Length: 315
Ligand code: SF4
Image (tube, rainbow, N blue to C red):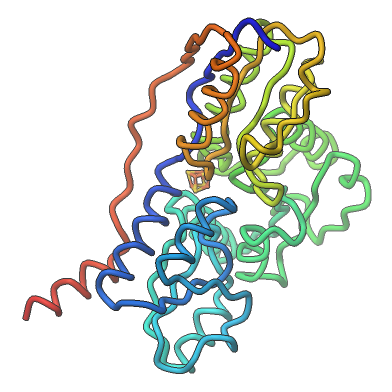
């Protein structure tokens, strides 16, 4: 068993995830159950199971939501066609899209009006990418890595901009951007990085802690993009790393010969699981220490639809 367990910060819930979870909880208080949620509100099994137990119903298609019901859009954002479908079906909708994803949706609209073509660096099929690609599919192409850049075909290399998914690996994304700039020297960048503060901070904290650890455990679910990127970050620095949903996922073989275990958590993973994991090691005598790279104080206001609902309820 390890002698040392290091809690790596920042870790866990970001401002967008806190807002999305609070949105479902507030909607359940205001409307009672069931409240429908398009897609998992955030990509974490523990969080989704807890909300399901309180009365949230998670669906992939709006056709699964009975007409006239309340439907929340997840933190990952949606394509405009989903909004239109919800309107046609007279659903009461609450949009929990993270404001940092909405920022990218707004950028797509603005660059489209300027006649630009968009190269989006993201993961095909991830709901955030599906939402962004659905805004202007006629002018947007997706790539996942630098290797795909030579295959791109664009109309006018002078009128080109790249955007990125919020949860990309900072280092892999910079490889893709380098390749894009090599092939299209006039390509424009977004006004500020699309990779969000939470992704950047958690990856930087892992990079800094990696020197001190011989194993890093990342609390997060398999479908969580940002959690997977934390595992990738540790492995790219030569440190063994694994993704775990709960303490039950820890395999004894991972701990053989390990002295210092770092614990981090993806932006959608609850702190209660991190504390369970830390206690697991401390029970066997490991010393606990904290390693904090930066303090985060980001907060987002709740979706405006919730303010309107509570105003109407007071009338
Ligand atoms: S990871 Fe970033 S973009 Fe995603 S919800 Fe959190 S703050 Fe928003």
